[in-house]
Length: 231
Ligand SMILES: [Zn+2]
Image (cartoon, rainbow, N blue to C red; front, side):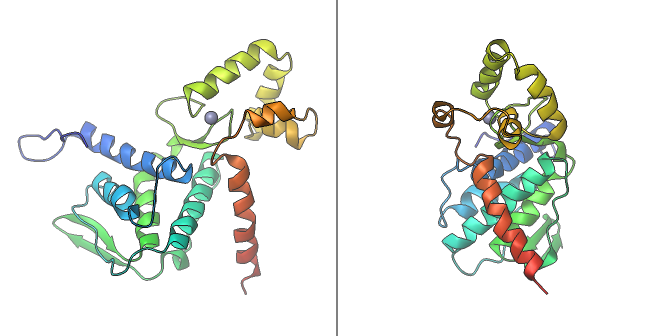
């Protein structure tokens, strides 16, 4: 991590504080896209501690046991679904039951939490998103969640270049692109869902985006179904 720029009174500059926040938030996006090698052993070091740092907390407390691998997966699914809801301009609701029992600790070091890894993770992401909710976006080409830096619509240069090529070579692209945008879909999703043009097999093979919309979508349903089944 870069050496923080400090003001004479020991406080960090606003620019530095925002840089830390966005770095921490970006880690959660990379986590849900499987771009950050997260294991139960490094979950706290790679995600929770940088988040506390981004939220200007001096420490996090409350862990007595190692995190379970299944817990890491569940947290990933919950955060992936939440970021996607937000990107699609809907609400991300975190039920208090998902946080378990936790304490809010307010001291001269700032406000922090004591609780489970899940509580830390969810409270951290919600804190990091405060004022930066608009940054949760889905790539207009591949559908992957990503952290918007400026006005970009694509997760990577690769995706934006693909769209540029499509605009030139595919005569129906512009029309479909405008409609997809209105519906909050990618063009490929629009075409598949409306059954107009199926993507060719070679196109699908060239399109193996890890953590893209399809696996996320398939993970949403069991969870929602479970919640509806609750009494
Ligand atoms: Zn993309």
